[in-house]
Picture 1 (cartoon, rainbow, N blue to C red):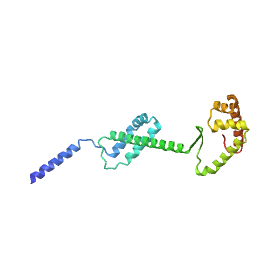
Picture 2 (picture 1 turned 90 degrees about the vertical axis):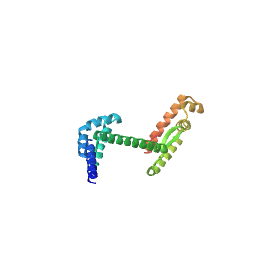
Picture 3 (picture 1 turned 180 degrees about the vertical axis):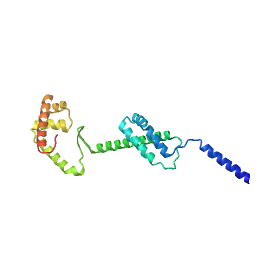
Amino acid sequence: MASDETNTQRLTDGDRRTDTTVPETAPSEIIALYLERRASLVRIFAAKLGSAAAAEDLVQDIYLKLGALKLSTVVHNPMALLYQIGSNLMLDRLRQQKRGLARDTAWRDSRRITVGGEEIADIPGADDAVSSHQRLLAATAAIEDLPPRMRQAFSLHRLEGLSQATTAKAMGVSTKAVEKHISAAIKILVKRLGSSGNGTV
């Protein structure tokens, strides 16, 4: 029985000796390595991100991650750990940016209004609903007050989205005449709506 216990103890001691042949690094030593290699990490991630400022932020976040390591944590390859943390943070940021871009695009699309293929306005928020409605009424009234031919040219081109050539054909006039009508209409509307504080056309 004593012999068995002795053999077991020898195996255990042997296992311990084998484990300690692998270099181990405590969190404090990893942070020291981080500080030593910080500039190199910034250059590496700046090349990956295409931005030195973004790389600076990311490398700073690596430091915060290291600060969260438990004192009992043992790392066999500290440099690989630094790169791994940085790569994970970079991927997380890229995913967040992609999701944010998708949300922004969907939000803009949901608020876009087009008439005749032209974007003319965004749906106002709740706080702006009243003032937006007032601006719309003022713009409609201003257009209605234009001289008939000028109003027709402006409406066909700017509101219905017809080209100047098509507008000219519909009105039975030259393209040059349409250009003059539209230019004159815009000047009148800008002057009227601008002076009344209702924006521009």
